[in-house]
Image (cartoon, rainbow, N blue to C red; front, side):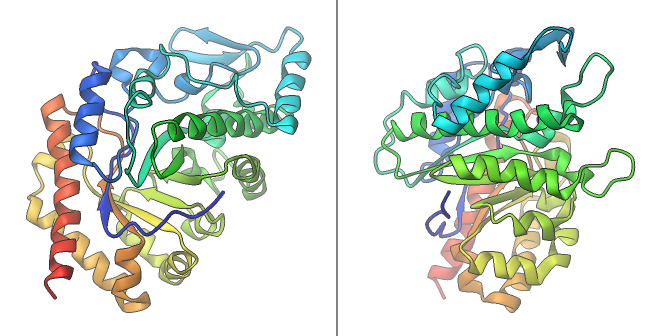
Length: 344
């Protein structure tokens, strides 16, 4: 795994779009974010393209239980689990692909010619969130089963490696795989406890397999100091709702940026109701306030070099035109900052 090149205050998206036509979704992404496109996920097309389901194709013992994924542990899963271990040890990632019905946006994006494009980003369900959402027949999250937890890290690693190789085929200069990990908000929780050692071990499995950029997206508040200590190449979060809490870790943020990390500031609300009630100039003011605060601690040049502007999360609660407007607002904010810096 490596850090990304300088972002130069660019903009990109996060994950989901409300579109049902993958060609139209990819066209919109490339038009709005030509320098930093991302692979859109399209959950409106069906359950299989939603979070967790989309990345479940290679999970040993999976069963669809209505709108829920369950592991069927009554059979003998040893052979299929051992195959994941063997593939991980030997680096056999080729069969850990996305089929069309699970990732139509990805299938469409990798047909595009992106030669000269600096970065292409894809998002997959992280092993922590996957392991908390998928349960056994006793309704116990499989993350709490040590053997399954170990398999999840290795399965995700193989899938992420396949993704970056497929994306590299577009001719893009750099690839970035981001783990979608909203369940990191449970770090230290007494209700649904997730231990730091488990998270770190899973992260190491994936980071050790991926050769390009590897990032984390968490749209809820969490222990940001711990997450930053993992040294993801890219950290994406909801800066609109959680910006104040995130900035409590200012020293860690600056140190992370100095180590070459990139922060995606999700300053634009991703749900239409909140977005439409928030004046766009006010979003720019919020972002400039964040820039000033981090800049005082680490320098504006560092902040601008290692920052990206995004919507706060995937855009599901909007129509297609509204989703494009939200993306365009993120691009506009980044452009305003770049233009102001160029004029200084």
